Length: 313
Image (cartoon, rainbow, N blue to C red; front, top):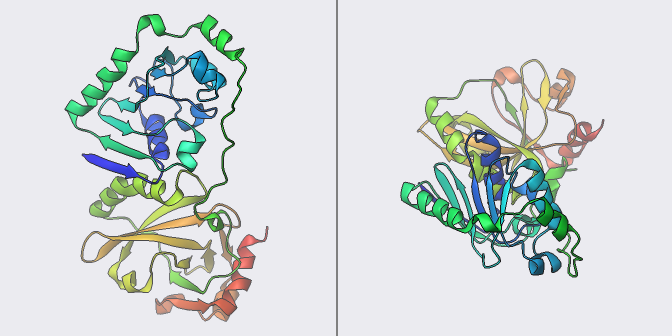
C-alpha cells in the first residue's frame, strides 16, 4: 500500500505508529534537522537509530536542538551525525515514510509537507539501507559529544511554535449553532465491514482533520441509511437515550458509506464541558420523544441555552 500525505501533517500518524509498535521492533530515522520538541513529535526509544545533522553549524544556527539530542541520547537512542544529510526518512519493520518533514513544531503545525507512506517491501528495505549507510560508527555521538554541543551558543533560535490554525472552536463547546439535531442513540455493535473501515481510516481522519493537533476526541459510529440524508459534514448533533441522557454535542466530520445500509460517521467531540446531562423534563420541553424514533431539529434561537448547560461545570 502506498499513500500520499500532503498539506496536513504526517507527524501524528508517525508518532502513533511508534507508540503502537513493539519495543523489540527497531525504528530507523534519518531526519536532517531536529527541533526542540522532537522527542514528543517522534518518540524514539532505546535501540532505535537516528541520523541527523548534528554539526556545530546546525546547532549554532538553531536548526538542530542539542537539548533534544540529549533527550534522545538519555532514552538510549543511537544518534549519528551526518552534516550532508537533507533527506527525511522514518522506517518501521514493514513500512516507511519518505518526504520533506523535519522533526519540529513548524513542520507539524505550519509548513505544507509532502510525504509518501509505503509498505512496498523493496522500498522499505531500500529506505532502511539508506539510514544504515549513513549511520557510520565513527560519527556516532557519545557522552562527550552531547556535553560539548550543549555548550554551543545558539545564535538563531528556532521560531516559537505558532498557534494552531485548524478549527479552534473545537477546543470548546460552541455558544450557538444554526442547527442542532437530537438523535436517538443506542449502543450497538459494528459490522465487520464497518470495523475494518474504521481501522483503515482512523489515522488519516485524525491527521487530516486536526492538522497535527489534538483539539478534540475523534469518534466513529456505525449508522444505518435511515440517518444519511439528515446529517452533513460540519453539522452538530447530540445523542439522546431513552433514560433521559443528553450526550455532549459532536460535530460531524465525514460520512463514509460501507454497504447499502451501513456507513461510518466520523465525529469530533470537544474535550471541555460535561459529557452528558440527565434531564427527561428538559427533553420533553425540547419536544423530543425517544419512542417516536425520530430526529428533532433545534434552531439557533433554542440552541444557546442547551449548549450553555454543557459548558457549565
